[in-house]
Length: 226
Ligand code: DC
Image (cartoon, rainbow, N blue to C red; front, side):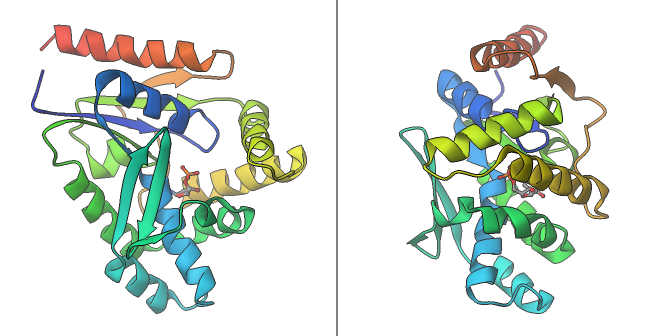
């Protein structure tokens, strides 16, 4: 196995990326990196400073804030200059604004640079996001693109909110996902799209355990051909 095996998992919100990427990383004893959390952290800070509409300030936040991720007990803890923003970045208001922030070219450049640095660890990395296989690590050893129907994705997200103690209606979740899909896929800078050499896994009808197995099978096959 290569020293720096990188597994890129991309796909839209609710496709099962985070859940399966975490489990794949745990099974392989790889580092798990949730890049969406980084875009969320910048969005949250810009909202808190009430400067979302001042692009220069948002860029400055992305360039100057030290975002660190720590994976503990199945949860990605997110710190912005040492402050724990883990919970704050998952709010529905952050959901509503994060696609806008992640369209900004300079914000992407700053975060992609950090992600590339984070990937330079000995061992292996499972990195999930929207542009990992296309932009962050175009030479990733394995590229997976997860898809699922919009209803299935909205159902999963609504359940996650419910589990976290917040009730958000199915329609609200679905509309938010549809809006984010449109912005994330049509933006000029590294849009959400499948890398040509990615393996597509449709998660609409498979359980989490099956998704994980499918991904681990792809990893096994790849290692055999090395
Ligand atoms: O995976 P997530 O839902 O937490 O991501 C939040 C937003 O961040 C998503 O709507 C698009 C953006 N994002 C991105 O543009 N590029 C990435 N690599 C990861 C996330």
